[in-house]
Figure (tube, rainbow, N blue to C red):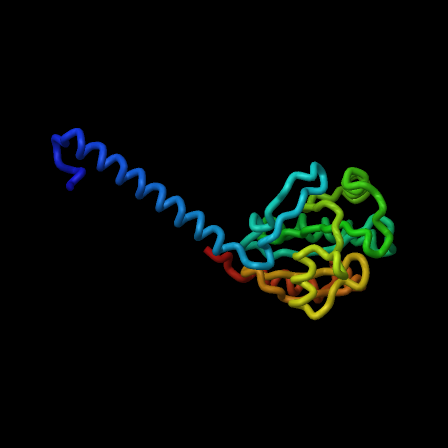
Length: 200
C-alpha cells in the first residue's frame, strides 16, 4: 500500500489515515517515555506547592542544578532564607533552582502552609519554589529525604540542612545548617555545577 499514489481507493484512504494516526500515537508515546527517562531518580517525587497545595512534580527541574533545603520559620538559622533567595536570584538564569521544604521535625515550624507562605514572602521576599510542610527525618520522612539521607549518609540534623544536586540529578554534596548560603565552598560548588552543560 502506497499512501502517496493518487487517486486512492476508499479502503486505501482509510488504511492510510489509520496508519498515520498510529504512527503519531507511537511517536507521542516514545517522546513521553523519553521525558520519563530524562527525569533522574532524585527528582521523581511529587509534593504539594506551599502556596496552594497543588501537586507539583520535581521532574520539572530536570537538567537544573538543585539546592534542596529543609526550612523552618522559628529557628536561629531562619535568616538564611535571605541568603537562599539571593542565591536563587543571582543564579536562576544560569540554571540554579532552590527548593524549600518546611518541616516541624525540630519543633520550629508549627504554622499552617498558608502561614508559612505568608511569612516567607512578607519577611524575606522568598520567590524560590516552596512546598507544603513535610517530614525530613526518621520513619515519617518523605521518600525524597529518605533517598537523600541514603545517598549522603545522613538525614538533616537541624533546619536549613542543604543537599546539592548536579544537572544530572546526582548528589554533589550535603551541607549542615552551619553552612551559610553565601559561603565560599557552597557557592563554588554551585558555580562548578552550573558550568556543566545542560543535558539534552
